[in-house]
Length: 228
Image 1 (tube, rainbow, N blue to C red):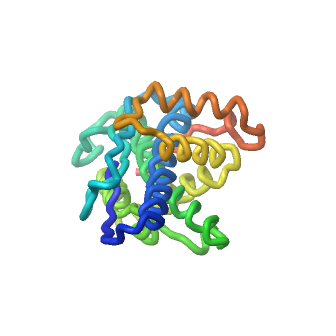
Image 2: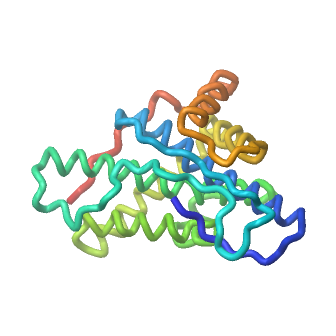
């Protein structure tokens, strides 16, 4: 999962603010990959967060990014020749990957809104707006998924709207947001080059023990069956 950004501002405060935005972005991806896949009874998948020395960054180099985390590594051209059972298995994995991809820029967008004392709701932000929150690559990859199993522009638009809503509801869930905040702070404070999958899961699991039980964790239904 690759973040896109470009900055020439080297002021310490601006650099720190960018790091905080990136940390929330990657925490959104990571918490979604771990918990949404688990709650949807999908197989665990390896992922990690790599971090680089912010002082040496320039151009489009990311400070931190999630590597791995996708259930579908190589997208098929179409699902038309798959059996019905295989199609459904692919669709569950497709939708999980797409929600997890959008959870990153949405988490960053929510962080920025809260930081600036602004509201965030489905009327104020859409998929295209996520490009302003490091999400251009994420949105492009979601479109690749959509192209694999929708046959008309209308079907594609309907599916993207559904996926966006699921990702938005995820970051708006109070419990999940607490976990994203906790992991983001952990990422910022880390002096490691790699936060491994087991470490990230342990951080999230520990945070869950101390979070107030006000979210919907444990009650998430399996993704709705997609219409082909």
